[in-house]
Length: 264
Image (cartoon, rainbow, N blue to C red; front, side, top):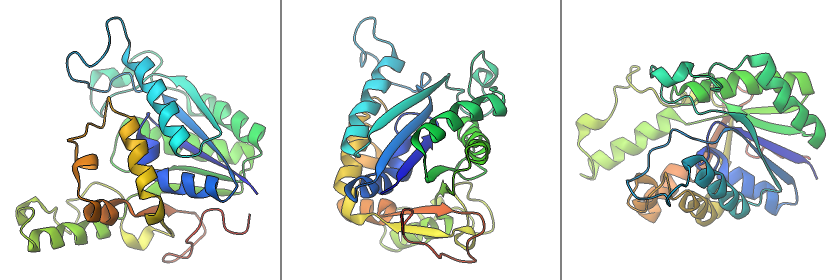
């Protein structure tokens, strides 16, 4: 058995991008550790959602603990940085934000956890942070450096399959579910994820979708029942989230791995 450490930017990112592989690893007897860079202080909530005097960061920590329990996580750690907000906002450069943290400093914090856990596998994000959020880009930079410092054997960059997403949108348009003009241009208009040709690992997590959805539901401050994630029909949810995608340097070309924990 081995240890998987998953590194994420904010509470709720873990269940969306890697919830399936986390629960799969836990069910197979591996130790799963979740590390979150920030407490998601800048998330948006409806007026009156929080109790009087309650801070959003407090709520999001509790939500993370609940989601982690659903995903079979043995340990949850926060690196202690502040949410930077979306790219281009004034909050990016605020004191203590993850975006402004020196990479070596933040990487040392994560590397300490990787060493403590003797982690054989770590997930980070692709170099664009999947969709360009500054904290997600920083997860890539910090995570890649931390795994180098700790000597972690397997490092997977969580991403989205851009081509598969486009195929799904085209099918939805054919079925009359969405307007065709909502589909991004195939020549580069889409700014989420990576092209399929760059992806080296695809993990079928369809058996874990009920747990993945339960973990999303635990993040009620950010993922409401009427949200895209939870309002989606079961088949649509399976198409969108039944496979989790990763890039591992030195693998490929093409998808060559189907299990992050294979052989461990």
